[in-house]
Image (tube, rainbow, N blue to C red):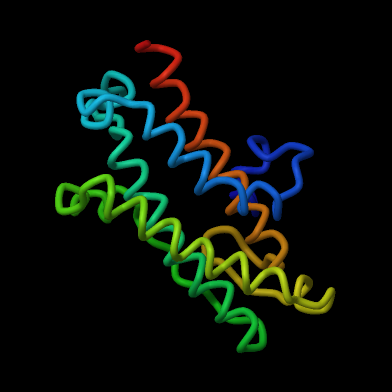
Length: 166
């Protein structure tokens, strides 16, 4: 597997800028949606799996931010930690418990905390390594770039709802 499966979404964009701007852009996108748009899957099911709704996408972003927060801090606190992968579809089974406002606030708060952490790091911190059991050894910087590419991917999905259904 590739170290950063979201690199194609990030392209030449600055990862730090992307992760700092994403919460506001997500808030803007979902704020322009109707209740029906927020609740409806973004696309018809494919391969027997339903696509997530905007509410579920934001809940996923909040969940992932918690994971990224731990991974970043674990990497700064330990020499070459092995991080724990997770199955996003298993986690998504619980998304009915979260409304859009709660998911958005969790994402914004955790992301703000992570942006503050990232803003004060040395070059040596950016090169610290961690190992993902499925992706291999990566640097702190690669994880931040993964966060940013992941953001761009899901933000594009949210923005497509507005383009497709307005």
